[in-house]
Length: 228
Image 1 (cartoon, rainbow, N blue to C red):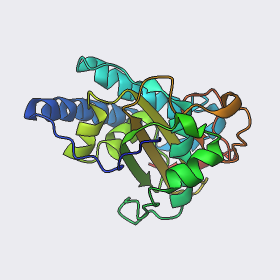
Image 2: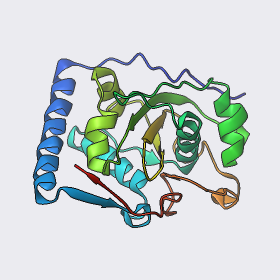
Image 3: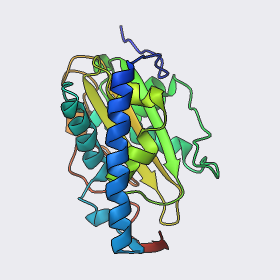
Image 4: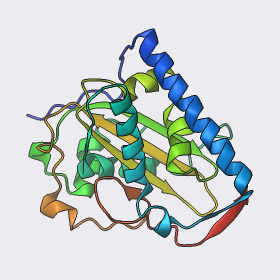
């Protein structure tokens, strides 16, 4: 029997925990402002952005957990692929104030996303949290962490929740934007859930990228530029 909790998590955290992450976010934003002063034009080529910026975002999430002495999360390709499926379904639904105006039915996880990714259904575990966001311009992983993932106290709680064991990140966009990020968390046993058939070799990744593998982002080969 497969278990699947709601993606909306009612987690709570102490004031100290929230304050700690707010300090970390301010540090990230300060560093980003310094980088922006060095160049006013950013050229984006998805194929050379560390190969896979979804993996970079997982690294940032784990570094912040380590700084708070919270165990790191396993980088799950199954969760990552489903996160990519989630934002692909929401593509085009980004409001002018960078809010995702889309909420796929929960049944889509087992009836659409998992089959599309080749997730072995007997290994479908518990999804314990979800963060989704969008921006009309591309953001580097560190920027995406501070401006997309850290939205409010609720998302801060999700990022540092001690019951999570696995994480997956999906990213998709077009060369003109908008861009979408999705983070899925699981509280199931590590490395035994959300297993991809044939290690994911059967997945035909046409656009975007997801964490847990070394496949570079696709669908963004065109190099574009925009004013910061």
